[in-house]
Image (cartoon, rainbow, N blue to C red; front, side, top):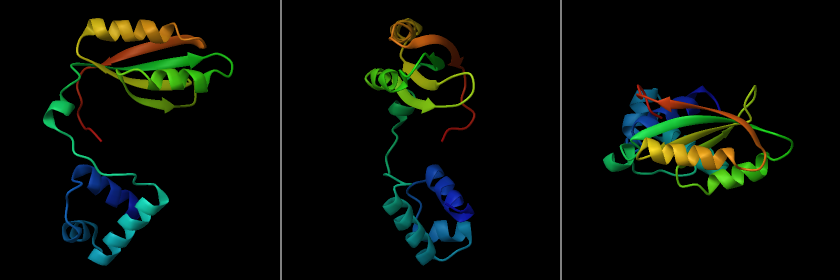
Length: 141
């Protein structure tokens, strides 16, 4: 993936409905180049789909948080599978450094978040965790 691909993806994240012409003007390339790049990114699996985000989806999680999780031994795959089954889990990220996994959580209330955190802490293999609430989002995807 080169710089033009990254700029194209950024533009599509901002407005996935932008026309090929608008994208071409924004990126300073031809419509054919834009079309070819999008097709190549889709074929390689870099772009796996396009979606619609409704206002209600964007505001459905009144309480959002990041849970950093330390996993003992080789339990990362098992813990990740368990996390994937929780409705409050919005995303799961593997990482390096102190934490093995960072999980994005979203719930309607603090009580629901507290319940989810308690359940995750009881997963076999979870040795330690730290959670931070997200207060405001200045820029999203």
